[in-house]
Image (tube, rainbow, N blue to C red):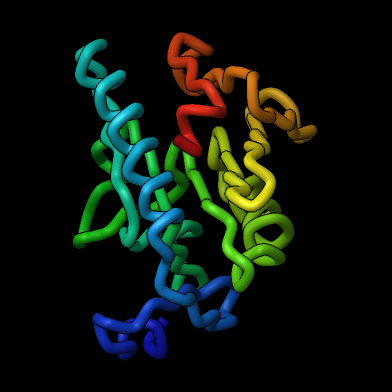
Length: 172
């Protein structure tokens, strides 16, 4: 953790199980998708007067509440205010979204999937801009993901499917 905390603020990196990963700066398409989703989740939460909060990255998440893992997802939804402390999120968020880039593909699909599942994240979305698809894990119900493509609607499981987002809206 000390290595992570010593990284300059303008450097993007994550610490997963004691391994430090450099992160490339996101591109315009990546940021556009993240902004769209942040607005959709935020508008839904505000309309429902929900207690959850949505955070667009970079936000540090000390996932296991130990010194071995600090992830920085693209978007996070937290419904328990007590997890927001020390300028970061401590413990598993309710929902995490990662937008895949060429440099993060293996980490997002393999390493983080296992990490988020074992840490207690309720729902994990992997957004793949190159293929315009969304892979959704609802870990609290099943660990088998569901793939959504253009023309389909992605229900947010943490909101009992009440929030529905068209795949085409994610990619504009």
